[in-house]
Image (cartoon, rainbow, N blue to C red; front, side, top):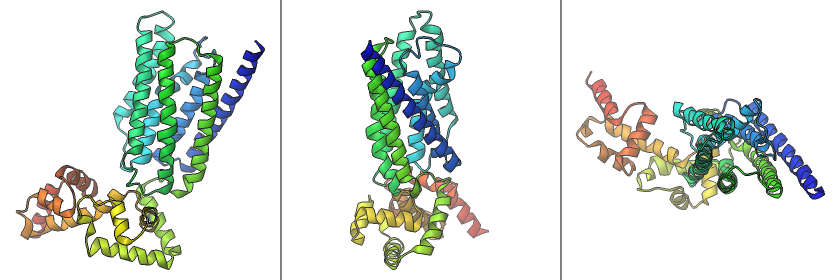
Amino acid sequence: MAGDSTILVLDSGLRGAAAVLLLLIGGSLVRDYGKSPPARLGAAFAIGVAAYVFCSAPGFSDHREFWHAPILGLCSGNVVIFWLFTRAMFDDSFKHRWWHASIWILLVGSGLLRLFVWAPAGSSLSEPVGIALSLTSAGFAVLAVAQSVAGWRADLVEGRRQLRPLVVGGVATYITIIAFAEIKLRGRPVPLAASAMNAAGLATMAALIAWSLLRTTGHGLFPETVASVARAMGRSTQEGRNPQDAKLLSALARLMTVERIYRKEGLTIGMLAAKMGLPEYRLRRLINQGLGHRNFSAFVNRYRIEDAKAALEDPGQDEVPILTIALDAGFQSVGPFNRAFKAEAGVTPSDYRRLALARRGS
């Protein structure tokens, strides 16, 4: 009994520390970067994890009361928030969709129905719904890992690159382990020792997140918009650019505009760095901090799209297939070209050609 009391005290202390740290993280993100979608989602995720700190505490679910519902709801839907956070953080073109909220509402509703209706009534739905929710958590953790890995090589923001391993190796793995532990327990109480280990894991995860954010937020991790970062970086680099960087930027501009290296099939940042005789990290920093770009593919595609625009505006090429123009500009297929072109120009390549030729004929 004395041993159990010691474990409970330790468990409570670790959970309290984790909850306070997580709420401080959430509040700091809202205060400092409240206009940035990744920061808002990061704050929501931190608050959701703080709710989970209480949800998973020994005895919390044994006596369900009305005021428990918001906390339990946050726990049920937080894995969706985590997935959306990784998407917003690691994909600069991410946009919120109505169905994102629908998924969150579905998980929250299912979790609350199970805890407050089906489980107390002994319904046969309770166990399969619980297993489905746990598997869903693991599935969204896998999606978050995929989002964190995708585009890693093309990421030019050093702080964001450093954050990816934490998401892949830490939070997503933790969510997956907890999900399968819940499936194995099937609603049975968590052993006190396992609960204390869970509390220690939560406290460690909170500390790692706090440390990572404190270490990286000065590197454009949470921009309001990509354009605002580009403007800010443009001002700072013009004020404090050293002669060596200016020389390298001039060499880079020559490669892109004169030699048109962007036309090279499958161009990677490694290939471009080798061409310039630079380490990859040095070229990433040069493009990010010197030109304001956050993604290598977006940086290269801007040149490719300008090349394609010139071809589409040329009356002498009005019979050239759009696929040929896309391939000549450096795209490997017409699908990515169409998407990138429309995102940049606001119209499809076909419409752009038609409008450009109509202007010339008028």
